[in-house]
Image (cartoon, rainbow, N blue to C red):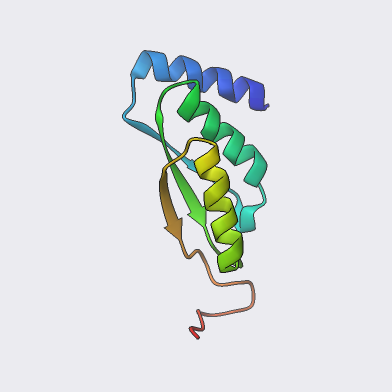
Length: 96
């Protein structure tokens, strides 16, 4: 589980010395708490920069702002915000 993954990140960051790790969260934020815990651990304890892929599908501006604040509090400052796929049943995006 998560403990095994954290141990592997620690070990690989020491052995491979990556410039950064890329962490993507689940669709519609389904893995939010786990993703932020993982990203925060890699950033703070494994001392490797994190690029957090943030899919904004189905999120309001307020929800995005809240997630960005949570990421900042976790020590994550590098974020790639993506619009994501259109919601189920939609062929494209409607812009207002």
